[in-house]
Length: 462
Ligand code: ADP
Ligand code: ADP
Ligand code: MG
Image (tube, rainbow, N blue to C red; front, side, top):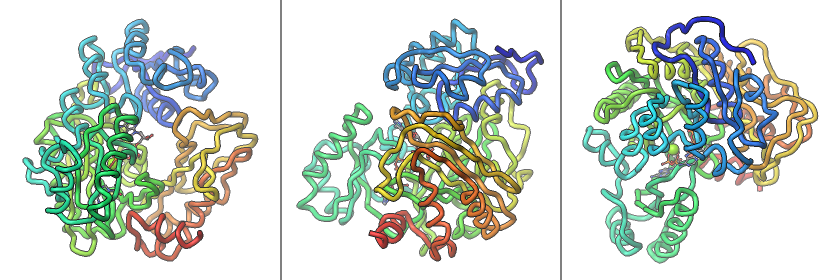
């Protein structure tokens, strides 16, 4: 056990942070804590006992068996571990309890700092229907659709007839691309409504559904924000249009299609919404962009650090996780909007333990050999190593390979070079998918939309 010998620098009242997550994001948080001179405690499941983050934390506490609902989702055990080990704060990472308002409330009650926004803000923004209402109140455009949750399929049908097909049924508590159904014709609506509600109930314990106009030929553009409750900053956009089944596979910044005027309007809208809800910490406002018209619509807010945050760090030079910890420790932001400079272009490829040649089938198992890429402009955020066994119980994310270049073409060239160097033997990964994508003429030209992967890239192959 290595306890930090140095006094705390730059994080106000925090001294020891509990990391309530696993995998690459747990490692990312530990690294930020170490750089800030903060001591660390990590909680983990039995399946992760030998993992790199568990080895690197100052202290580790096993809180239960592999299944997340008995470990990483057990709020009481995690808070107890924080109390027993005298942690002043809990960083939830992404996924798991990161957007769980009850967990944040429990932390608040126990006088443990939850590294994120206030519990009330999480619960408001976590309800995607309420979030749409708040966006509208703040004067931020939203996709045409429900003002509230739908009572039943009949109400959905009535609204769909008004806004026009196709429509998208979405889970009010949704996340991770789940609980969504495209409905192309009125006759499909009742069945799809029942399906969406069932999936939402199983995934989120809440079957509330709302409806939006289903837009096509759109891009997913999101704005990173950072707030100490007083100063609200934006850190530009990320273009996350490369998706499969509404899940992101590759993200980049700046967006190849956003012009300065639309960017300015979108960033201003994000900041306005944050002010309206009293947001603190790092957060992301997701928008749909109709690139042809320049119109954009609020989709949702993620009240946590996001998987793709490194691309923003690469171009802005701001460490978002350290900023979250500093804000949580009561330290005001020491930078003003006009001091933030965006330099060059960054791309992130999510390397998952999935066989991209067999319909992205999950591929857990033992990694026999691992060679991480490096060299100029390459950052790898990963918890894997040779001899590591990828457990079957969790998210399939193995590594995030991030490239930086002075411009987009240099960032693409570096990413290709890096992924050709990278070796993960023993299991299948999404590296071949990314190599194919990175040489596709439409991707190279920046000419993609949110269905490009499914309809054009993979569709063409089948
Ligand atoms: P990001 O934009 O950060 O990639 P995602 O929506 O892809 O956001 O989610 C990131 C991670 O969090 C994924 O592991 C996803 O499965 C998980 N996740 C997101 N929302 C939820 C939720 N409501 N419940 C459980 N897990 C979620
Ligand atoms: P989640 O909470 O699961 O992340 P989002 O509301 O962010 O759900 O939507 C996930 C993805 O689904 C978006 O990135 C986008 O590609 C697609 N999507 C969401 N809303 C619409 C819509 N109204 N029309 C078309 N595509 C949409
Ligand atoms: Mg989303």
